[in-house]
Amino acid sequence: LKITVAPSSFVQGWKVRFMENGTGIYDGRNGATDLTAKPVVSLSNGTARLTVKSVSNSTDAAGPRGARVFVHLLDASSQFICTSGDLEIDQWVDADNDMQIDWLIAQSQDLLNCFKSRTGIVGEVARSVTGLGQTLDPVCGATEIFSTFIRISPVCQVRDQNGNPFGPNLHRLNTNCDLSNTVIHEARHAWQNTLLGRSNLGTSCPPSGPSGSLNDSDLDGLPEATPQGSSADGIRDDTRNQSTGGCGVPLGDCRADPQNKVYCLTERDAQSFGNNQRRACHSSLCQGG
Image (cartoon, rainbow, N blue to C red; front, side, top):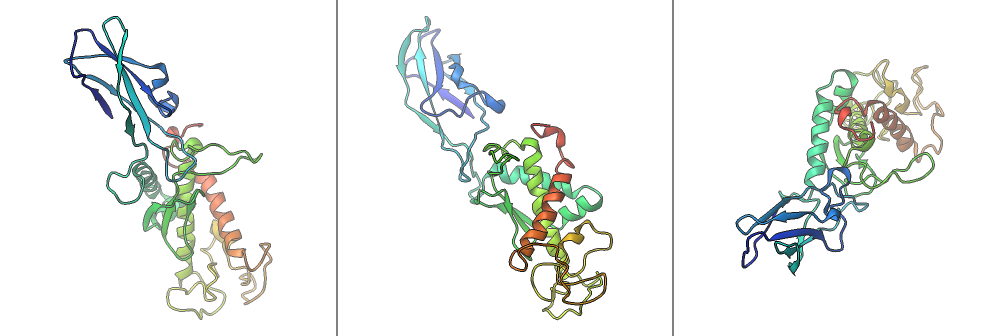
């Protein structure tokens, strides 16, 4: 963003001092321009230009408020002459008016494309995703049962092992590869959902559900069989005992059965997969290592 200041009259040697009015977005952190230092720029042909960059923090999924930038006009001796009004600068923009924050979609799609290019299970999981969008829920991401469309939140209100919030900018800066983690985590849910309609996994019970649910005849969102040797064995329907080929035999692999078993099993699997694969793409760009 270039801010141009053109005073109504011009005198040789005049300058402008750039500042914020009541906001602290250009604070010099994370690569942002430091307006707290009140940079002074000389006029050239009546115009002063300053390129400002921001990496704005927000705990609100709707984004931060706009920065309010103004200038003081100074004479050749750096004495104050007058002040400008405020220029409000939007931070998390939606230039194409698709109701999604541009930086979030661009960065998430870039990561997803990178994961898709990988060989092995990471690429297979990522390629199961049929689309990507934004959620305004402050949880990190969301994927509905039976869906292969994933949603990512611009904020990720997660906490460390002591219960302390890591901060509002985990996704914006991909701190510790947290945006990477969310993208491949949600992709894992999409991949889990593709197992439900497969007919080549040797289900232990005859499918009785509608077409497209061949591996989930009871429509509970859990596959009755998983690929041989798959790391996803833990999300198998716990009312299907594949080891004996029987039906309706509880395996007892999740508490709070049956109400929360889908969330318990699939979420545990996605969390493990995301944590293990978050650095499969662009790990050198992840702040914090």
